[in-house]
Length: 379
Ligand SMILES: *[C@@H]1O[C@H](CO)[C@@H](O)[C@H](O)[C@H]1NC(C)=O
Image (cartoon, rainbow, N blue to C red; front, top):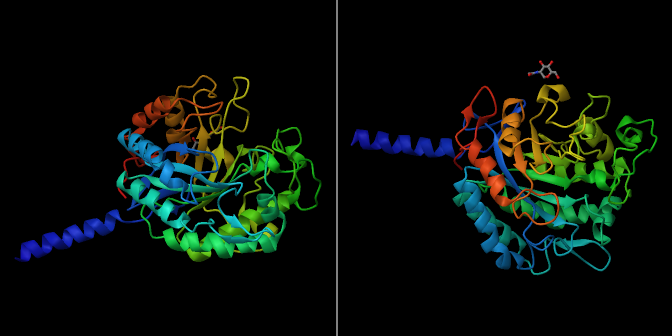
């Protein structure tokens, strides 16, 4: 009897231990006392901009589940997925450009929770990425949220906070990425006495490729306000914003970290609106990684005090490295994770799904606590 009680007690304890959330500890992720390496891929989309909201998930879920299963079978533990992109079906706007909800039909939260439930079944952490700055916008809604703070506040109150509230206790919720590559829309070469808003160091960097439209001040405020709303709603949330290149994600290498706590607070004034991990993307152009690439540096070279994930990379633009070598590099050189581009494998510059899964499979059994950490986590 006593033994049974003890055994049941131990099982309960074991369950509690497994239920721990992924957290930041110094420059690493930890879960249940173990250092964790985020190994996985970008499920950027199934149908670009039409995956969640207004019942669209109903028509995408077979595909989403196919990839969850494949990533799980090949030992991946995490996926980054793009949600609003530029706000065509989610969030929902009124005719004046104010947000009235996550979508028009009111199904968004149920759709996203269904995806998280399936991800939990497959032991995969989901990192929703809210907006996309890497492609020239076709619609005015996102522009207005970036430039008009009363509209941004309507998004926060009517969409973002209810969403976070609804999913914050879901075991498969990994963390939030506010915006993909805002540098696509940043105005380079703006002089400012405030280093956080001075973009002269981005002249001729390629930044602004998707229409140089917004100041660093506007983009950083956009990130700061949303990050603050999420952190106030869920103080344990993990928070990032994916930079297009590490060159504006570090103060070393003769460049400037626009994503620092100081810059985000300076831009938006909201104290809790900071990131607790950094993430950046890296592709070789013309067969070469640039001098800022994480595949040319170890983590310590960047002088950062938070975990750093290589949140987009692939072999096809990998300077000849095999995908297993890229994963191994990230694991051995202090990075906290690596996500391949991209699982649905459509469009240019992507590895095949099979090649990405080969990389994940190579990582599957890793658990070196003095290097990247554990890959096979249990949610
Ligand atoms: C990182 O690389 C630099 C050279 O770029 C080297 O001096 C340093 O020892 C390395 N640090 C670690 C922790 O490997």
